Image (cartoon, rainbow, N blue to C red; front, side, top):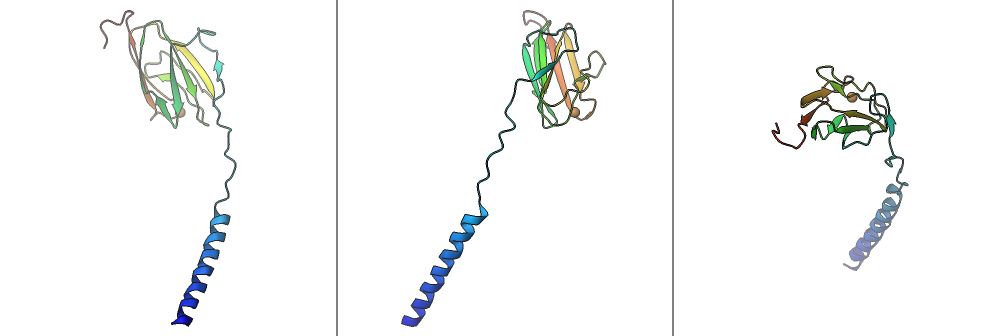
Length: 143
Ligand SMILES: [Cu+2]
C-alpha cells in the first residue's frame, strides 16, 4: 500500500513536469504582424472626378464587394477600395464604367450620373458581383 502510493506520487510528479515543459515550449507567443494597418488608400485618378470626395465607400475584400448592394442618389460618388492582395476591377455589366485593375490599398472613385440599377462585376474574377442603385435626387421613387 505504502509502496504503491509513492509510485503514484512519482508518476504524478513526472506528468506535472512533462506538462509544464510541453506547455512552455509549444505556445511561444509570436509578435503579431501589424502590417495590415489600413493606410489611407491612394486614389486612382483616372476618371472625371479626380479630387472629389466620395459619398459612399465599397470595400473589396476577400473577393467580395462590401456592401454588394449600394444605394445612392444621382450625382453621388462612390469610392471602391481594394484591400485584397489581388487586383480587382469594378466593371459595369453594360460597359458604362470600368475601373481597370485596382491594386491593393488603391481606391477608385466614380460618380453616377444616371438613375437606375448598375450591376457590375470584377472582370478578373467574374463571380464577384455587386449592384449600385442610383435613385433620383430627393429620394422619391426609390426602386
Ligand atoms: Cu477580382
